Image (cartoon, rainbow, N blue to C red; front, side, top):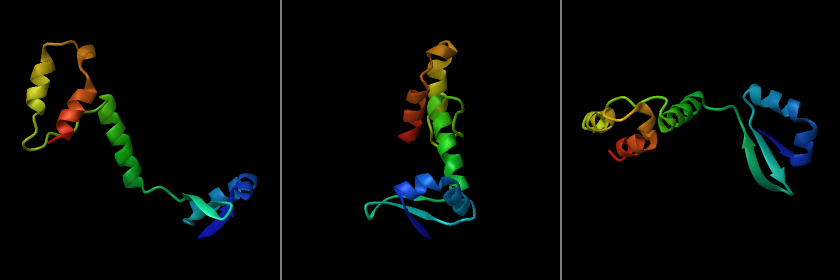
Length: 97
């Protein structure tokens, strides 16, 4: 684990990113107060973030879950044009289950 001040981080960003690539954790301090932590991302968490964003945007629909009301929701919107469908409403109703 490396600790670095903001100015030193700015001046040597490539060096610290190189450490992170190797698996090192870089702690960023501002006047001796820890303000940030730089580490390699957990790939499964990153993937989950992209999936959740795609669901919210309506780019993808979540997998049908037992007891979900997706069929009812899709029937409700079946009579509308695709542009009338509000993905956030669909996502919110699925999230409540």
